[in-house]
Image (cartoon, rainbow, N blue to C red; front, side, top):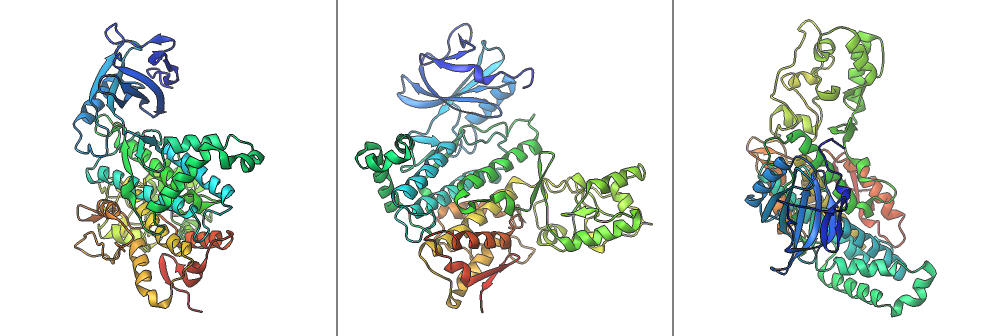
Length: 547
């Protein structure tokens, strides 16, 4: 904890008022929240702690956020949030002030979506409902034509789209949030709500043996069953219906403050998007993790592009071996620590100059031969933050290039950090793909050679079009019969911007993912794997499985 940061765990609610280290908080010597009844702590973020309160005069629930540190910066944040251009996805600030005790601490007040729950609570509700269905109806999560489990899984896909649609408005407005976490995301859902979660928690208080004998007469179970029946009426498996959800972020983080480091905020947004996707799509990755199917590598806290191309690694390694006498110096398109050590020992000149390769942040080598590179060479991909200032590399004219395929990248200063727009766009592709595949499996159907349009739509969904000079959003390959308006809005915001592509689908290892899903559905009792037997995926291209 920094010296100027408060220990936010010292805030507590005593007799419906806010206290810090056992003393009432103060503003100008007076308690500032006499109009509020403090109910509960909602959550903690990088910038502060939030509480659910009840406004005595307005008779409505609201949120009070207390800053963790740097009250001047957080007060500026509150001012920005009060007039944000994206108030439809942000709970705009209605009041703010500076506390005298604890000193140098600001607070802000904003509306709370009535009957909403946090993202964390929604996930907990989803997981408990799946567990309930497994016990009560003895059905697996992927059972074909299940009574309720299919609708629960589909709700996860629906919320994924709603969350991405909300975040896409940040991308559209060139905003980085920087303080997203599961507890400051509020979700209004008529099915998954606080009452249902409470009923589930009551049910699971029973010991396993007691549930079978008592739950039929238990009020909590009756409420759960009523919720599941409502869910079945509202949700259609294989069809995105994200309009049931209202998603809002409690605040705008520190995204619009001049003092905010955009790169740092961007990485925090990327981690949030991936963590949210991992939680929402967890049922599809039983025994593994979504992270295992992404072309990303964590290096010193940064998420960097990482491509498994053994042939390129081998070519570069052979070239470096001729110079330094050591083999296997390139892995996943990046110099190994041993290679870096050799370059550092060989003199003060830059690594690019000494190796004859365009080497960027964390010694990543960008190269021709993959889809991402093709778009970058022709500058059809939005450069930020993949490149920095397009500075030319220092290059030794007398040193031959190890591989001619890297010549195109000599003018670029590659940073390597993956952008939030690329991640959110690729996750959007993933959710749409899972929606289609899950729909077929739930219906115990296969894709026949007559369904050639489905193959085309899948390929159009996970791959960008052939590079063209007039870049535009193309929704012709989207099946609008199963993808709703929020999906289309997110697609338009996350795929193209400023006549350049934002997302290409290259972050996902589609073939490995397909094989994993095929294994999961083939080995799950009651699940149908017909759709997996009817198609194959090679690289990122779908085709019929013709035997």
